[in-house]
Length: 250
Image (cartoon, rainbow, N blue to C red; front, side):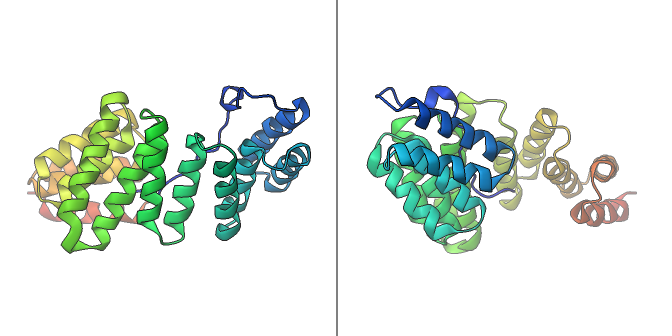
């Protein structure tokens, strides 16, 4: 299950409508292109060059923040995302990136507040709602006493996601994971099956379905799923689950 994610793929349409120096806009586009190639040095140079035209260029600050975050320089990234938001309050993507950074820094509740701020700007911003749901899910895993409350809130966010993005494999997987942990194995198996139908190479979905089938006593089917998982990757969890499925097979 992946953690929250940075949102940085800024297409031309996400640049503001206000007057921006054309060279600054060009450098911002180049910076995001370099990010797409994982060339953090060139990306950082491009965003810094854009900032020479305007020190408070929100998109350049956001991009430079992503460069810092991708290199685990969290405090520097946080400061840049906050500067981007000071320059442009309605910058939903920067709220998401600040939230992700705060979660990585061990401040999940502050991160969740940023995800909610992004959703207040754009309720259909998938990554903001997915990151909010996953932050709640992970907090619930870490705090059994608070798990019912946090997982109920997470489930609500995942269901919101599926209203707007019914084929989002991550949402189906995470809902199935919570069902499995809560002992609802039949519903978990259906959720993992749906996730695997959307993303047939998802190790997590195949493994989840395998262990759900074992719990349901459908061990022969579980063996097939675990072997399918191992054909994609020699994932240790699939190896362990295959041994368990073989042991319970009649």
